[in-house]
Structure formats: structure tokens, C-alpha cells
Image (cartoon, rainbow, N blue to C red; front, side, top):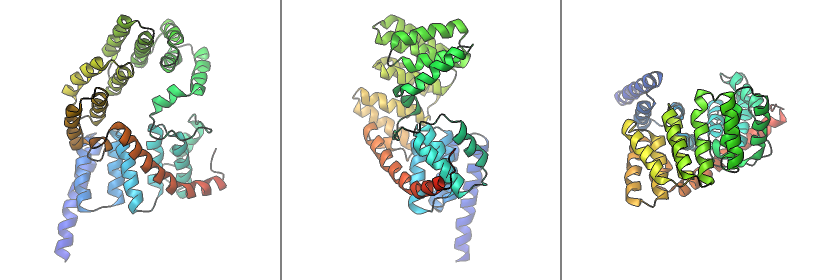
Length: 338
């Protein structure tokens, strides 16, 4: 019996050491593989938590939510998981859930390692207290939909001597008022567009010109955005903008180029699947789902359409909210909210 226990512990310890070393070196994709090996040997909340942070580092927030759900099915909710729920919810755009999870964290573990971060997030984040949880929506989609965010940025732009706030206003307005968006592009250019806002400004131009029927100018802005790209997240924004404008050829052209450089990016694979769904290319979509399985085996898109995956995430989030509710009530009674 003792020999059997040792034979289990040794490989488990080896996989965990490899996973933690990979995390320290920033090799998050390799870390997820090592954590999965460890999880095959022993199902444990510590392994699930560390693996969830590895996927968080890969911006695979849907899989983070799956692992939260997986943990809650088997183990009690503790402070570390509450904090991770908050981080995941903020990145998924669900401000109400994030706020509840932070309050629950401070209730469970008021002197915990994340105390200062939790307090700071609760007191400085621009929470929208009256909004219902926008299940599964990305933060950028919330900013597009809600006028109060635009109002806030317009006020900030009037006081901002630089072009950053005007650049953000242009991006927010591009989907609803192209002419007004282009006005803020000009203001941003007059004040000076910060380097990290160049892509955002050009995509605002691209969408605004496209909505106004100026397709040549839209394509020029798209190409300028591409020339200014320095990060993968900016490429993802470009792909989403092209899909939004139904310029599927532009999106595929960009994805094909980047997939050659980043063959294991789960985020780009998900965008590629979305594009192929929009083009009704079922066989190609199936191939991409198989590639996604090797990179992110828990992601719902590997077996579902985007609509089905969204429903799956909403169902899991409902369970997470149910588990948090008693803690949130207790936290509010303790007046933990700012």
C-alpha cells in the first residue's frame, strides 16, 4: 500500500514542479499541460486553482470559468476562488458578479493576501451599480452598449490635454455615430495620439468610414491599424472590427498571417472559429475545433457553436452566482461595500 502511495506522489510532485517552473518562466501553455497531467493523478483544488491562473494568463477566460465551476461542484468556496471569480468576471465584463465576488472574498478572508487589491478594485473601479449582469459579454461590448461610459469619457476628454480620452471616445462612438467618432479622431490627432492608442484610433476610422459607405478610406484605415500593431490583443481587435463590418476576407487574411507566427494561440483560434461560423464553412470550422482541443481542451467552442458556448457559460455562471449569494448577503450586512 505504501509503495502505491509513493508511486502516486512522486509523479504528481514532478508535474507540479514542472508546471510551476513553466509559470515562472512565462510558458503558460506548457504549464497548463503539466497541470492537466497532475490533475489526472489527483483531483485537488490547489491544482485547479493554479491551472486556472495559467489559463487566465493566456486570456482564456471561458476556460477559467469552467475550472471555477468544476471546483465549486466538488469543493467548498474559499477566499482564493472568490478572488479568481472576481478577476475572471471583470475580464468577461460582468461587473455585478465581480463586485459580489470581491465582497465575498473580504468577508471570507479579510486579512488575506489579496486584501489590498480587493479593496482597491472595489473603491476605484467604475462600477455600474444599476446594471444587470451581462452574462458572457466582453468588456468592450459593454462599453459600446452603455451611454453612461461614453458620457464619462466625453467629460474626461474635455479636460484631457492629450489625445488618449478622445481616442477612446472615437472607439466607443464608432458603432453608433460615425461622424461624431471621426470628430473625436481629429481632436485626438490634434492633441497627439499616444502610441498605444494608434490601433484603436485607426479601427474607429475604419468602422466609421465603413458605416458611411467610404470603403476605400475604411480599407486604408484598416491597413494603418495593421502597421501600428505591436501586440496580439491589437490583432484580435482588428479581427473583431473586420467581422463587425462583415469584411470576412480582411479578417481571414490577417488571421492566416498571424496563425503562421502564433500557431498555438487559443484566443486567435477562437476568433478563427467565429469567422468560419460567420462564413458557414463547417468543415474548416471542425478542423479548427480540433486544433483548439489540443491547446484548450476544456473550452466549450471545441464542440459547440458560439451561441451554444455562450449558453453553456451562462449556465455555469448561474451556478457560480448561486454559490456566492449567501456570502454576498453576509458581506453586505457587514457593510463591506464601499
